[in-house]
Length: 100
Image 1 (cartoon, rainbow, N blue to C red):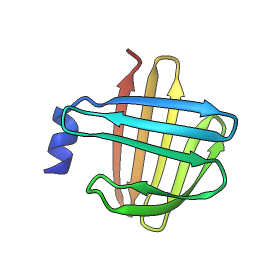
Image 2: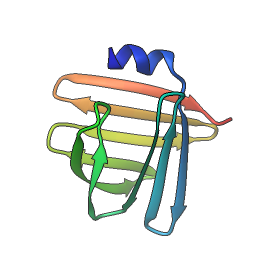
Image 3: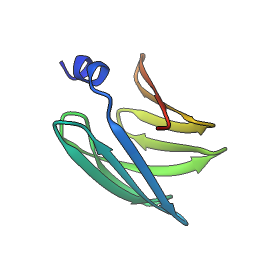
């Protein structure tokens, strides 16, 4: 159900950066989630189902990489497109977004 919703709903994602500090906002018709983190420091991020997951976000070659116990999430912006790749075990989810 969550994957179907993710395919059908086009969220608005806003990423703000101030040095090593980031604010990541996701807006959909059903909810708005705001998460802030600092590169290299442990943080808790909300998962798709609402659980809190601890991870450390780092920047590597222009990509934001979040390493958690059960998954790795990579966000990369190239031009007007953002690619988000989430890998958990042998399963990979790829989402592509365009700048509005």
